[in-house]
Length: 262
Ligand code: AMP
Image 1 (tube, rainbow, N blue to C red):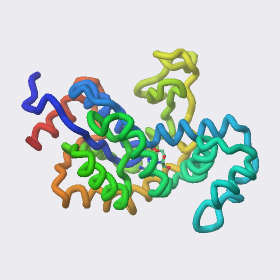
Image 2 (image 1 turned 90 degrees about the horizontal axis):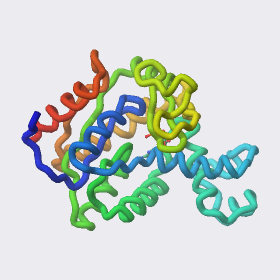
Image 3 (image 1 turned 135 degrees about the vertical axis):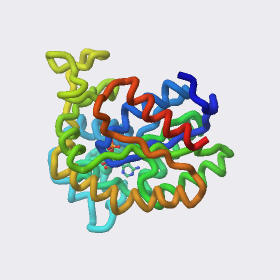
């Protein structure tokens, strides 16, 4: 089916509650518009993995003074390494594993460096922006770099369905491919179909942490999306739950809603 849509886009945001079903919609956008996925969640998990490999077992509270992290040189001293990736990984872990958003200052700087590295265009922004401050930061950055955000795709889903989905979610630690034990399972011996590596459950995919992320979405991401809308960025709402979950239905449900924006 031919869609009445531009061939080339600058950048697109995909948003929704954590676990709403963003990934299959992102894949549609990547394929249809030849875009690249830029996921702050995946970036944080990479750094978190570097910290985990570092094998530090003590309580992370010792790096937090109640309001902010202690200075990096003191963290480095306590950890016994000056490796910035390990320090960033510790900071990511501290928040990600509580189901809380990583502070804006850290997230914005990290996002900026990846976005610039990729030439500031052709990206599907996955999980960014998620707060009002991030939305403001992004729009300023986009203006400064003379690029644009074409639209937002908001994947909608209910809290109950998300909890059911997310606790059965598994990911490939190698290529980040997302599986679902019931709807899109990995191989019989629990491996990624593409990498042949054993899939894992995200450490933040437990019910308590999922509920905390759902609350973060309501408190912080809704205002971030409201701001984007006020600034004239169109939003296409697409259903995260489909009665018949087939690649064709996912694609149609995304493309039809985007088409309405043009
Ligand atoms: P995700 O894979 O998108 O669900 O992200 C996993 C976790 O990474 C979130 O629960 C947050 O702790 C953190 N994270 C990802 N993106 C952001 C963001 N834009 N702002 C703050 N924290 C984020």
